[in-house]
Length: 215
Image 1 (tube, one colour):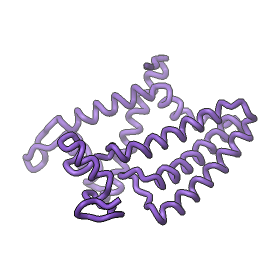
Image 2 (tube, helix red, strand yellow):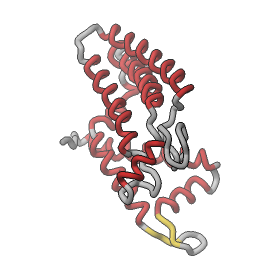
Image 3 (cartoon, one colour):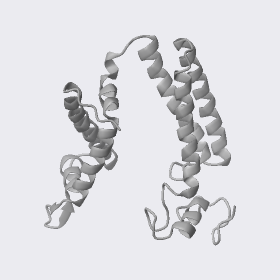
Image 4 (spheres, one colour):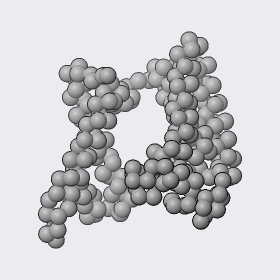
């Protein structure tokens, strides 16, 4: 479908169909001035991603032998990966637009990983390595909400930087602990790992006290 001023098949930030629809209907209410990663059109394939998780959940609860469940998860995962890659030739795999090829490809990757974990934990009984995931999973809502709140506190808390200019606490931590001695990519990775380890420690405290926050 051609976008006025850009034509059909344009995947640029301003020229893609999803951004055009969002800008036409949601102007002034978007995440960015010209686009929204959770817009109207991109929400439809995102729902498809959710449905793949629901269907996988039904398969896990089907009562079939665990070996059979794991086996078919691997098969479905590989088929989805191959289908997504081929689909991506005509309709590129694009996370920002959440394209249908991205849905199929990432669903396949997720099935492969989940199938491996299921095979290792439920079929083979090798469970100790998964303790961090269990700790996170028992308080998934709590860590999701609290990490988001803390991130905003870090962003909106301003301090004086080395040059005297006002910077966010997040930027100060990032620059002091990581960018001062790491490349940009490794600094980003280091910050992410620190975040994961910090919240694992917090959730471990709740886990040991048997405090589980649910809706």
